[in-house]
Length: 179
Image 1 (tube, one colour):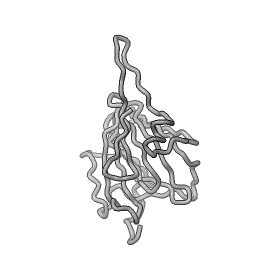
Image 2 (tube, rainbow, N blue to C red):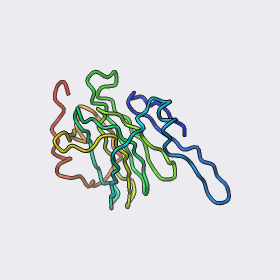
Image 3 (tube, rainbow, N blue to C red):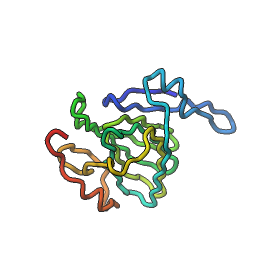
């Protein structure tokens, strides 16, 4: 695995080191020792999957408030996604900065995302599946989000004539001072 720090300090990419032969390839996607040596959370309590039937489905931007902030390991199992991470930690040097990555089964890239980082994605293909390993149990009372198109963040999404977005994701309020 190649673990790389991104421009947001609580976000790392994890790229596979594939060993290929005539049968195909093999790569590790998780290793407690390598994660630990890089300072990454390696203990996950919950797994989730997001199945999306249509291209241009947009989900996000979601996070859990403290004390239930989540660390997530995210990867694309089928299709393709434009995955966006937004730093919502007021004490961070990268507060309100966002970064995006394309996730596909072919590139095998995973994202290790720490607490205080909002997550969202737009599917680039029909039948896109993202899987999550999460270190904290979901707490509905602490689930939160910010609007995907909030001008305070200026997130640049792939062009789409029409997007499928839930009413909940459309209704998050604009960012407020200090958030």
